[in-house]
Image 1: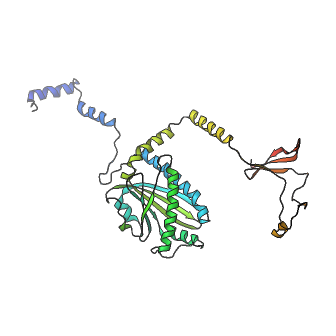
Image 2: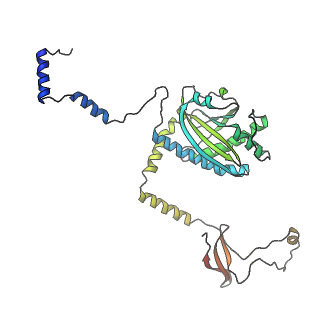
Image 3: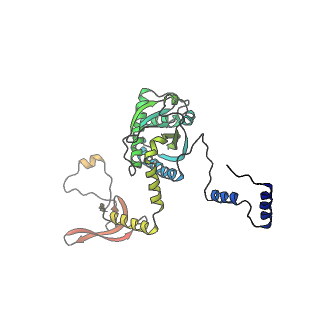
Length: 331
């Protein structure tokens, strides 16, 4: 039990303070100094933020790679220009995600093997119907009013989602080898319950331009699914940030040396001509084909199918050869 000071002891202490013998507020200043050494941040217990800034940076890098992969894979498949932009990465509860999704929409539940748990990909109607229209031979026109997908449209969307998952696998392969599968497809978000509503999730939003149409794709991954790889993401981010200029220069040099050893096709193109199929069929041994070039003009030298140099044709010994005379402007 604490001692109680008498009035005489209190007076002595007050006199000592007024004369400078005792520093006032030592205890408070001490505690204040301890608090100042630590960074204070706001924390909402109703919405716990459990992903650090470093982890978010690592996730952003991975999901940007994912966007680039989709930007490469989708144009040949849809036969049009496709641009994929990463718009946001947010932390929110699963209930907040479900309530933000429009109805009807195209939801795919994913098995995130080898990670334990499921994730959800949502393709909204302004994106889905132009894609389906293009695959079925149309111009990629959006619908005036959203509706549920038919059975045929659901199969087309399933194929699109498989292509998207292939892009995800490629973009994450340096960190983890995914074997993701589509478990179910739904149109009503209230029918999809992969975790408890209060569980925190990572919501990744993309804006996708398909020709003239613009829509969005959202990927919702519960935090408990990502937890096993979050530390690896942080380590990967730290390694990339700590790369010194000397190591970066050496790495660049090694890459250039490796590329320098790669083999490529070099063609000296004497000229071109245009013929009908009937003329080609009638060609016989000894026929002469006139090219669109002159024997006095330098010929193009193509590297990998791209004109890079000009050269003069000739011979070296018994073999045909070309002598490089200049580089093209693009080389």
